[in-house]
Length: 215
Image 1 (tube, rainbow, N blue to C red):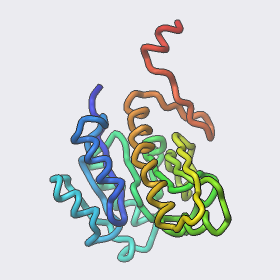
Image 2 (tube, rainbow, N blue to C red; image 1 turned 180 degrees about the vertical axis):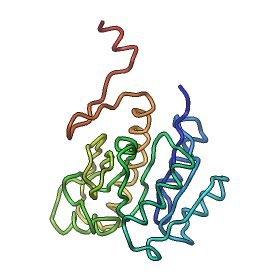
Image 3 (cartoon, rainbow, N blue to C red; image 1 turned 30 degrees about the vertical axis):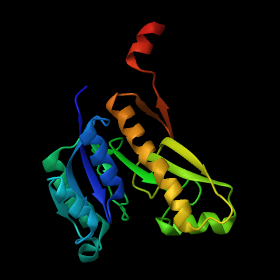
């Protein structure tokens, strides 16, 4: 199986990016990160890319502040690289993707969609909302992105307990541990050609060997 070409969109520290880089270099992820695009300059995620000799670009939202132009600049950079899959890793802005990228862009959200998601629900804000509501469970969701915040078809979800005495930081750490497993799982399924989008559902197909055995 050939490795996927990944482009990763970030807005901050790039912890998700680092997870994917480490797994790729260890040979446990069938993908290589070949391009990083950040919506902010001077963030740690760009430094992580440089440390691993990964080309990086910046499309600063604060300088553009227009979804159409912002998205056009990102699309132009992606077109030059021609990735198999685009990964959103802590990317905080709406990317109005062209039709050809539908089903080729994944996002991860630190809650169990459709709970605590949408515009304004990111990072610490998500975990604070979960705790304020008194939830007993939280988790993370990997989904195909579309042109709405945290809305596309769900690929993988992982749950974690919310413990007595949890803070936003302790809950975030527990959720992120699952994110580090869920995103690679979704990418592997995509690489194996085992994801089929049917309406709002993502069907996970059996491995080719198993399908042949059923014939």
